[in-house]
Image (tube, rainbow, N blue to C red; front, side, top):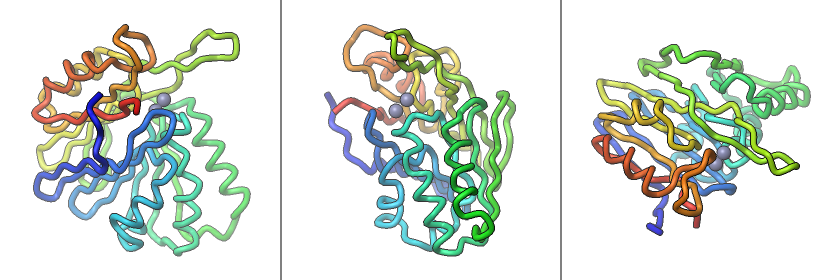
Length: 236
Ligand SMILES: [Zn+2]
Ligand SMILES: [Zn+2]
């Protein structure tokens, strides 16, 4: 298995991405910069440590948007510490958290955070539940959400689809496509094609395709249709 050397970085003029980490069941953590905007995508455990060592407080305070692909702990585990850090450091600019409809993890973390800190939060937080695949803009970036296939096991061994989406970020005519966790699916195939950068998970342990993650072969076949690609979420 190809070893991942994190952080993975990519930059085209003032549009850049840093993937601090992407290890299945452990953590994910991604920072996108577009002009003066700082976006965080899938802040798993360790996001604050990585942002602090790579970017510093000033850049962390500038984060305007958090994008969540789905509620699994390796993608949202750092949300609480990030929100709390921003409170302690007196963030003043507003923060929007985008997440797929039905992602109760984000709503629960936010509700608990608001309950605990009530009137002592110095910045405005907006929860933006994504219910459809319409594009929207933030800070001169166009964001296109798209549904993906990602399942999890229940106690009886059966599986259920979790609310899960990928995102395509377009800035200055450059496109970054991030599928989050997903099995092979047409929406990802479509959005990754001709993207300037595709970030594709290859989280499946063996070579037999399933409906939770992609095999290395599936991930590469999609990645190759983009101008450049990273394979992430590869089991260690
Ligand atoms: Zn994951
Ligand atoms: Zn997942």
